[in-house]
Amino acid sequence: MQPIERRRLIQRTRTSLLCRVVPRALGWMVGLAGAAMIAACNGVLSQTIEAYPPMPAGPPVPVSAAAQARVQALGRGINFGNMLEAPREGAWGLRVEDKFIDLVGEPGFVQSVRLPVRWSAHASADAAATIDPVFFARVEDVVQRLSAKGVTVVLNMHHYRQLDGDAMDEGETIVAPAVLELRFLAMWRQIARRFAHAPPSLVFELYNEPHGRLDKRWNDLLSRALHVVRESNPDRVVVVGPVTWNSPTALPRLVLPPDPNLVLTVHLYEPFTFTHQGAEWFKPALPVGVDCCDAAQRRTMDELLDQTVREAARLGRPAFVGEFGAYGKAPPSARIAYVRAMCEGMAQRGLPWMYWELAAGFGVYDPAAGRFRDDLKQALYGP
Ligand code: BGC
Image (cartoon, rainbow, N blue to C red; front, side):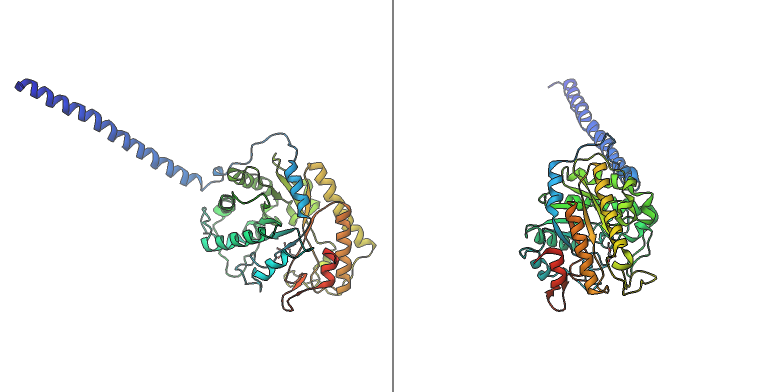
C-alpha cells in the first residue's frame, strides 16, 4: 500500500471511529442527563399532590353487578377491632390470634371480616411512606388466612390520626404537614400493588371515619386515592364512606368519582349516649346505666337507616353498615335489645353489616373465658 493510501486509510478509520464512538458517547451522556432529569423531576413531583391525579371526571356510571353482589356477600360480618389498628399490634391488649381466625370459619358465624389497620404508624415519615416490610408481611398473612376461610375481607386504613387533625397516640411520630396527604396516597399505592393479585373477595376501604381536618379535603383525597388504587387494581371493589365519622347524615356531602366498583359504607352508633356509655376514650365520659331502646331512640335509629338507604339509592351505589355496636358497660339486657333492633332494622332494609367488634370492649367473644358471649352472639348471628 502506498504511503498516501495508508494515511487515507488511517484517516478514514479514525474518522469512522470518531463518528461511531463520539455520537454514541454523546447520546449516552444526553441519555444519562435526561434520565437524571426525569428521576429528579419524579422526586420533586412525588413531593407534590400533582403526582397523584384525581379520577378523570365524567358522568355517573352504573354500579357493576360484581360490586353489587360483593356487598350482598358481606352478609353478617365482624370487625377485627383493637388489633392491627392499635399503634402497635398488642398495644390495646389484642393480637390477631390463630383462634380468632379459626372462629371465622365456624359454621353460622360470619360471612365477612373487616380488618382495620393503622398503616401510618408502620410507614416512613417521608412522602414515600415506605411500609415496614415485616408489618406488611404480617398484614398480608392475616388477610390470606382470613380469605382462606371463605369470607370477604375488607382491608382498610384506620387511625391515621394526623390526617384527621387528631392528637397522636403514644409512640406515634408527627410528620411534616407537607407530606401528610402524600403519605396517605403513597401508602395506598403500596397496599394496592401488594394485593393486586388477591382474589376479588378482598375489598379495599380507603379510610375509616374521615372527620375534622378531612371534612374539607375528603372528596378530593378519596378521588386521588381511588386513582392510585386503580393503577394496579382496575376492578377491585373499593369502599368509601362520608365524613363526620362515616355518618349517613354526611352522605349528601360525599362526591363519588365515576367508578362502577365503588360502594358505600356508613357507621351507626346512635343512640350514642347508650352505645358509648362508660367508654374510656370518649371525653367527657358518658354516664353508665342508659337503657335502650325506647320509641325516641328507635326513631333515631330508623331515621339513620332510612337515610342510608335513601342516599345510597340517590348515589346509585349499594351500601353496608361497616360498624355498629354497644360498649360492654351498657346494661346487658339493653345491649341485646339494641343489637336486636339494629339487626332487624338492617335486615328489613337489605343492608349487610359488620359488628364492632370481636374480642375487645364491644366484643361478641370473651377472650379471657375463651368463648363467645352467647346471648350477644345469638342476637347478632342467630343460634
Ligand atoms: C374506632 C374504635 C372505636 C369504635 C367505637 C371505631 O371506628 O376505630 O377505636 O372503639 O369506633 O367508638
